Image: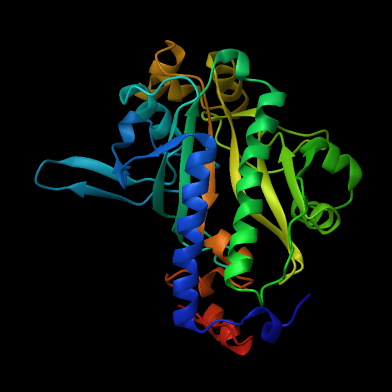
Length: 332
C-alpha cells in the first residue's frame, strides 16, 4: 500500500482541474467507442411507473410531493430502466445508444472511503438484437469499455506524469462469480474481490444476483433490469488502498423470459402490474445492454486518492471527517 504522501500530489484546486480534464476525456471516448449520444435524464420519476431502480430491494428512495398538483415523486436511484424506455421513445436503432449524467441520493448508504450518499455516474444503454444476448457479446462490450479505461490512463498520466505510470494490465480478466467462490470458498465476497484484483489487477466478475452453490448471491441485484447470467462488475486493483475498487456495474438486460424467472425467484411478481414491466412483457421495449460507470470512483482511481471524499463534494459524518483529517486527506 502506498502512503498518503506518495498518493496525494494535488492541491484541492489542482484536483478540481484534473477532475474536469479526466471526466471530459473519458466521456468523449466512451461515447465514440460505444456509439452513444448524450441525452438529458430525469432527476425524479413517478413511483407508479416502475421506472425507478429498486437496487437490492431494501433501499428507500428519497420521495417528495409536487404539492400544488398532488403528484408523488421519487429521486432516481439509477436510470437502469428509464434508459431502456427512452431508447424506444427517442427512436434509437440497433447498436445505437445513449448516455446521461446520473445524480442520485441514497440515504441508506453506509458512508466509507468508496461510498457516499451522493451518487454520480455515467448511465449508458445501447440497443442490441435478441441474438446478441450472449456471453460472447457481453465480453465484447466489456472489452470495449476497458479500452476506454486504458486510453484514459495513458492520457491522464501524460498530463500528470508524477502519477503511477501503469496501474492497468493490457487486458481485463473474465471470471464468473461461481468460479470466484470456488477459488476462495472461505472468504467473503468482498474479500474474494480483493484477492482476485490483487492478482489480476483488472477483473470482470460475471453473474451477479442469483444464488451461488453456497446458497447466497455474490451481491444483490434488482431482478428487473440485468439478466443475472449476463451481467457483472468491472473491478480494478487500487494500489493506494490495496483493495478492489468497483468502477462499473453493467449487463445485458432482461428479456421476457429472464424477467419472469427473476421476479419469481425474488418474490417480486407484483411488479408485473407496473407500466414498465407490462411494456417489457409485451415486447414493446428494445433488447439492450447497459450499465453505470462511477464518475467519482474513476477520479479516485486515476488521480490516486485514498477516499471518494477527496474528489466529490458531499456530506460526511463527523467521525468520517475526523478520520480523514488524521490521514491527511483533502476533503472537498
